[in-house]
Length: 462
Image 1 (tube, rainbow, N blue to C red):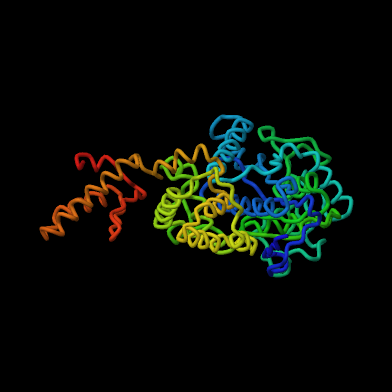
Image 2 (cartoon, rainbow, N blue to C red):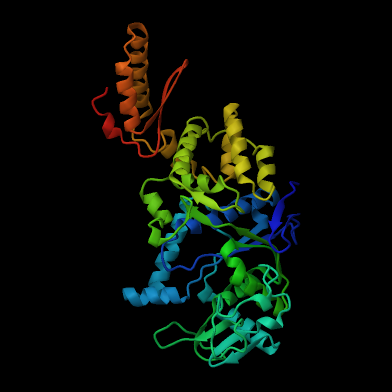
């Protein structure tokens, strides 16, 4: 069996992955708070852990992997959006959840085995909170239930923080009803306008952190294999999950994995900088989800990922070039061993893509296709054949492209005899301005559509 190595945030080293039960490998990944469209940064953990999901299914078998990714559908941001819009919370979360599923499917993500909604697990959260209070790890105060952080001696181990060094008020809420500023909310009261459920501490709603602990325990049991999420969740969310789950007597996760954050053109994504955009924004601009996935996988998940226009264009060119040769879905080919080995080495997808480049250069077309499908490309061959086989991001037929290339070939042959290259230069300029990359060699002329290709600029040339 293929050996998988994963970097475990908990131990700060790469470890050989050994599941608790090879017949049911289990993974939990923190999902979105569904109040709006998913921005491009939200897509990174989805693509990273979808790749891991695919690897685990490849190694252990599709029916032997359980993947849970939750939806937080009770949150103050959702409440605020409902108040602003005049719509119900249910309407908003139902719509935004479907947006998320549609957008993540567009970037090639498989649906997880379970996608629990927080509001469907309120009873389990209340039971866990009551247990923590009974064990002395939590307490009630003014309609709140709070976790005693100092009751868990290993608090801060995941993120490498010392409780004594944490500055009260810096990343924690200071409130008069807290015994200690570091204590965090498990349950809080709801006003008449806010969603709420009856509990031993009054009508209210859960805090954020208790959701994942309760859902993971209900769906995956006392202990499971992998817990994942973005690097920004290490503290306080994952730290708090560990504390409350361990104090409830659960083993919780053996391996912790975190992806680094995303930047845009070298800067932190921010609405104030004007570089904030959603996955849907890109899709609506005509950027295929495969391109988004390719750019994401081109950087190792534990390194900061910089989304740039240059990378997007290069990804489109690469996928277009590969798609011209590798769309024979009738060929059943095993995934190349080296590609699997690289992905098994702590998800080295950048290395796997480099290997696919080599396979393409060697003309190993069926191996390229098998490798791409392993990485989450071309899951829907019927749909993608129409998109890629006709030319990625182009409205020209293959015949028209051939005719334009032939036009330039003739002009070049004439120029070689007359020594007048003005017509060659004119055609090349026209093609480049229209968004065609011009490749000229001894073998002939090739025209490759790139991002921003506008076929209207070629009218009148033929």
